[in-house]
Image (cartoon, rainbow, N blue to C red):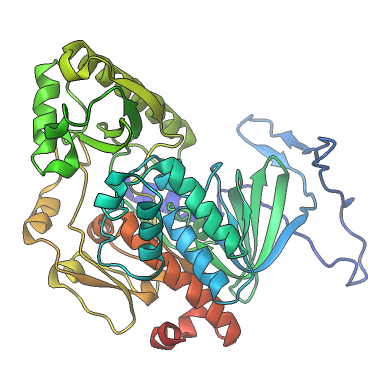
Length: 481
């Protein structure tokens, strides 16, 4: 069962099990008649480009007929995913002279920071560049809590505005509500186009360099890149969590339970919950004060959910939201400082800790982290511990606990881990870079995602200027460029 599961994932990544997407262009230039009538949806009138096809006799598949896909944009650098990694990549590429386009599935930039209501940026304190710039903006424009934490505890709504303004000021083209659904690779092993779906229908986007900042490695998978999922051939992944915003609490009255007031806040909060008859699925519940009586809450785990299964994610989101409301109702019944607690919002998207890890030209390993590896092409230094949220309610496998006991020494994230091994003009940034399961549990946090994106964006822009592929670019040259 395990090998067949892994083969399924890999063959799906290569497109073997996906309906073909035909991308036609330059027919007229070759003196050929276009295969189909060329037309594009009219965004003003509401007209759409209709799909044609047939359901196969068994009823298991629909065969879609070929159709022309309009090219919606052409750029030097196309960034897929507007989360922390995508923000770093797009800003860096644009500031290094590249015409840059960013595509994002949610209705805002920021990914897990905003649509996911994360509210805390981990492993960011030792970072420079764009990460420090973002923290400074979040602190200066934010609350007293934001200033006290140097921007690492932030207001998600403020973050939306800050990120949008920075990207607009940098001249970046932004399209939200847009999902990557395909990729075209030419005979020279280079990405030619990304195919998306949105309210505008199916569209194609052309670029010289592409950066996968989707978190789950969606672009790389559609481009046929190799990848790994989970801890073993069984593809066991870390659980998902749904964040929430709360109100009705007095920060002084609940101070012993606020995470920033001490490491013992989590176990104290769990004890309080259990005394109230609440048994949260996450046994390290986290309460944070953001500003003006607004708090964030992370207190649930959804186990065994695939990041690539929309039905499973939907069910997990509904389950998690129900648990959040049940927990808040239980706390409210306890009375005292909890008597007026209420849910303000739950995250638009559930927090996904783990998707694909794309094969790069270097693979970070647990041993690299435990030994404090130094690399001549380092793009950033990370120090976050092995942070494997229990793979199941009973806890983690022995191997995970052994590495946790060894701990992480400050280590380098190498530039080659951001460079696709299989597609020459594709880079990755964020949690989908090349690493093993345990290494990923450390570098995946968002304080590392931004500098990864910054490096990938700069490398993309400089590789165009120097007329080399990203894997031919010496990072020391890029760093000093």
